[in-house]
Length: 212
View 1 (cartoon, helix red, strand yellow):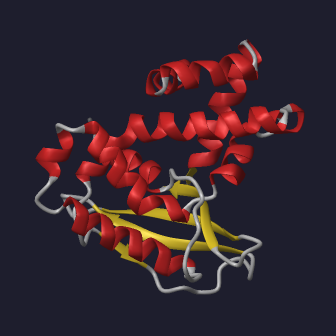
View 2: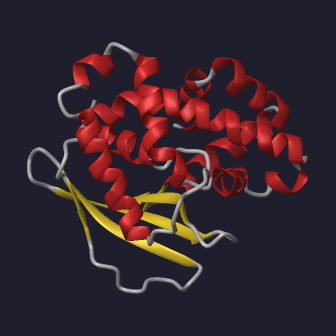
View 3: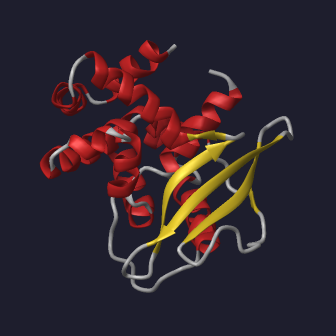
């Protein structure tokens, strides 16, 4: 597995979560820094244990990352034009199935995370008061710095939640939107949702292979 592939696993994982209630709103930079710090602490000395216990790893991911991602909004972006014709039930089922599939597909990528390997650039007022971009660099083992940016939007409750990650200019949302769109064109949204619900990460792997 290439270093960049490992990075993609980590970045996707950091952005995969359901929305949850937060005690007090935090700015986007603080959200990313908090996740990075909490992950480092939680993984320290436990990587072998978690590598052998997938359920425990998934629970750890949920406990740390869940409050900080707008999965409903992100899933609508991933569905693209197909979201317009989807029913509310289909959108809800897709969001849940897509999250579960991503979490299981990329969970082990989280174990490649090493505390202190993420540099977060100072906030420069990117975008506006409702959208923001957190610019970071992930430091690889060979010292190379890879830009990884996180797109945030402010919810009606005033909380900042992430909805996309951009790795070396490649958008997480756009990448999956293209794969999902092609799959729906070949079959249907219902069939894709069912495969995600029943096959999980294997269905995602199939999407990625078909896109090559």
